[in-house]
Image 1 (tube, rainbow, N blue to C red):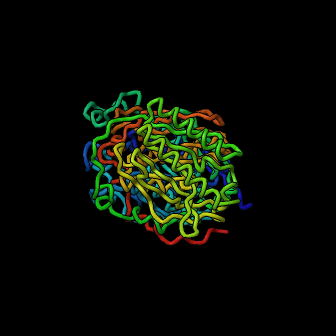
Image 2 (cartoon, rainbow, N blue to C red):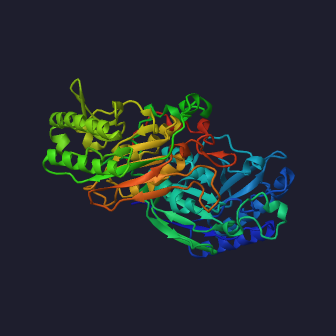
Image 3 (cartoon, one colour):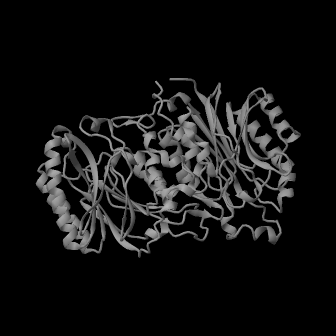
Length: 578
């Protein structure tokens, strides 16, 4: 165990009076220091709301990094002997303005400034985005990285600082999207196994007394213009250690041991960082304009259809397991499913494949024949995860079968530690153009790595068929939903009824953009079956909804990525930290 560090995070209203905002920030520093906090975090744009009349107004209300506004915070940090992290619109050479975060130590020294990489909406009209690769700052409190609001909605910045060794990631927010606190912040913690600390405003994002022409730039109902608060401190396990209330001012604390973020192992599975496959993530370094999704766009008109994600009960007799899977598939077809997804290695008991992969491959060939007959007879598509043998090697392979036979196959890229005894990893991503849209394929352990779905999104997948088995509790709770949200595509996850984590099969669907603002930045609707039962869920899927990634004007789930700033994503994987 390492040293204990007390972290504080705040939430309060930021108005258009810069001096009043400064006094409020100083009061919260005093409050945090009084309780023994080592570091206190403040919201994004703590000096002024992020809405402006014009560029000159933006520059005028921004702070001078060497001026008295920042100076007062430095002096209060020195007086109170506390680390302070805050974000403010900051002047560059006139008229440039940056969304800049400051890290100030106990002596009042600015030890780091970090600028926002990804801008949202109208910020693109006034704020200059950063061109520096995300950095990690070594401090007496631990290794600290930053994401700022939209930086954390897309997955790359948090992943980059995690790969650079961050233990604590600070996220200042100026947002009225509740899915940031409910989904994005805790997911960034658990998928990278870091402490995430967020600070979000509470109160109107734009002062209610501003003239009507200012409000016309914020096209949403008045009751939706408020920031929610809900600032939080999240453990690397995804457990929320402290969380502020809904639309109230306040400060919350948690005592943490930053060294707990160094162990990236998942018991019984592998390592969240060491098991990545950067040799296959080259798509993530390509400019958006040259991605396959743009070079060969999927423009085929596809009508919405019903798809089923199955949850099947295995049986000691593989034949019975096969028959049960066929029965549930038939029932799903009877109910109108045109695409049916079966769970990971569904005919086999846990450990059976490792015990005799040759036998599992033989059974798999027989199962494929029967599923192919079912697809032809019922004129449906079926996705199944089975064992493939080639030249004495075995693969965990996902097949996509249509009425005319095999349409595509994918060999699992990321292998769990137990599966490496029998399986050979695949070496490419697979999408298949079908009458139901462009379908991407994943399996099992792939789902724990954000790069998997991101690469399929870069290939233009409309939806992902995902034979799964829930072994890690945060995957069905957070990660699967996040993969659908951050890539704006549908995911159909079929689950084994004997999965170690008692959750059901899940289908996560996305709406067509644009959507009216309802307090969610990238909406996802989730349907889930009851755990442990032999059943399926049937959902209407709209493949075309996945093709427009523009969350709000000038902000896009793919085009807003800063591929030039995230070289660590595709760099050779370093050895895991001890």
